[in-house]
Length: 82
Image 1 (cartoon, rainbow, N blue to C red):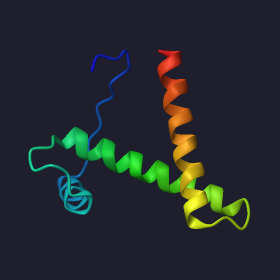
Image 2 (tube, helix red, strand yellow):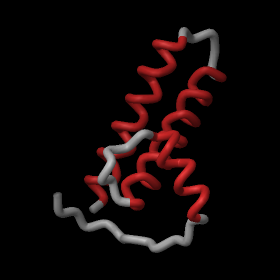
Image 3 (cartoon, rainbow, N blue to C red):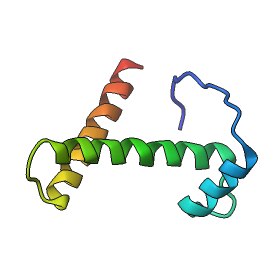
Image 4 (tube, rainbow, N blue to C red):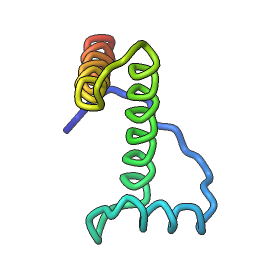
Protein backbone atom coordinates (compact mmCIF):
# COMPACT_ATOMS: atom_id res chain seq x y z
CA UNK A 1 0.00 0.00 0.00
CA UNK A 2 1.72 3.19 -1.15
CA UNK A 3 0.94 6.28 0.85
CA UNK A 4 2.56 9.67 1.14
CA UNK A 5 3.21 9.79 4.83
CA UNK A 6 6.21 10.96 6.73
CA UNK A 7 8.19 8.18 8.39
CA UNK A 8 9.83 8.83 11.76
CA UNK A 9 12.56 6.77 13.37
CA UNK A 10 12.41 6.21 17.12
CA UNK A 11 14.52 4.31 19.61
CA UNK A 12 12.59 1.82 21.72
CA UNK A 13 13.98 -0.18 24.62
CA UNK A 14 14.39 -3.80 23.45
CA UNK A 15 12.80 -5.18 26.61
CA UNK A 16 9.78 -2.88 26.24
CA UNK A 17 9.39 -3.92 22.61
CA UNK A 18 9.57 -7.60 23.60
CA UNK A 19 6.91 -7.07 26.29
CA UNK A 20 4.75 -5.22 23.77
CA UNK A 21 5.16 -8.04 21.26
CA UNK A 22 4.06 -10.56 23.91
CA UNK A 23 1.06 -8.43 24.94
CA UNK A 24 -0.11 -7.62 21.41
CA UNK A 25 0.32 -11.19 20.06
CA UNK A 26 1.20 -10.10 16.51
CA UNK A 27 1.95 -12.49 13.68
CA UNK A 28 5.19 -14.38 14.42
CA UNK A 29 7.00 -12.65 11.56
CA UNK A 30 5.68 -9.14 12.34
CA UNK A 31 8.34 -6.46 12.07
CA UNK A 32 9.17 -4.36 15.12
CA UNK A 33 7.60 -1.38 13.32
CA UNK A 34 4.30 -3.21 12.96
CA UNK A 35 4.29 -4.15 16.65
CA UNK A 36 4.96 -0.55 17.72
CA UNK A 37 2.31 0.86 15.34
CA UNK A 38 -0.28 -1.65 16.53
CA UNK A 39 0.43 -0.77 20.17
CA UNK A 40 0.10 2.96 19.45
CA UNK A 41 -3.17 2.45 17.58
CA UNK A 42 -4.50 0.35 20.46
CA UNK A 43 -3.53 3.08 22.93
CA UNK A 44 -5.22 5.79 20.85
CA UNK A 45 -8.35 3.67 20.50
CA UNK A 46 -8.44 3.08 24.25
CA UNK A 47 -8.09 6.82 24.91
CA UNK A 48 -10.97 7.53 22.53
CA UNK A 49 -13.07 4.92 24.33
CA UNK A 50 -12.30 6.45 27.73
CA UNK A 51 -13.11 9.93 26.44
CA UNK A 52 -16.42 8.80 25.01
CA UNK A 53 -17.35 7.06 28.27
CA UNK A 54 -16.63 10.26 30.17
CA UNK A 55 -19.30 12.05 28.10
CA UNK A 56 -22.16 10.31 29.86
CA UNK A 57 -23.77 7.07 30.81
CA UNK A 58 -22.93 5.14 27.66
CA UNK A 59 -22.83 1.40 27.52
CA UNK A 60 -19.46 -0.14 26.73
CA UNK A 61 -20.80 -1.19 23.31
CA UNK A 62 -21.97 2.34 22.48
CA UNK A 63 -18.69 3.82 23.69
CA UNK A 64 -16.75 1.35 21.53
CA UNK A 65 -18.89 2.25 18.51
CA UNK A 66 -18.17 5.94 19.05
CA UNK A 67 -14.46 5.25 19.48
CA UNK A 68 -14.39 3.24 16.25
CA UNK A 69 -16.31 5.97 14.43
CA UNK A 70 -13.80 8.55 15.62
CA UNK A 71 -10.86 6.38 14.61
CA UNK A 72 -12.30 5.92 11.12
CA UNK A 73 -12.97 9.66 10.85
CA UNK A 74 -9.37 10.41 11.85
CA UNK A 75 -8.08 7.98 9.22
CA UNK A 76 -10.31 9.54 6.54
CA UNK A 77 -9.01 13.00 7.45
CA UNK A 78 -5.43 11.78 7.30
CA UNK A 79 -5.99 10.19 3.88
CA UNK A 80 -7.68 13.28 2.47
CA UNK A 81 -4.88 15.53 3.76
CA UNK A 82 -2.23 13.44 1.97
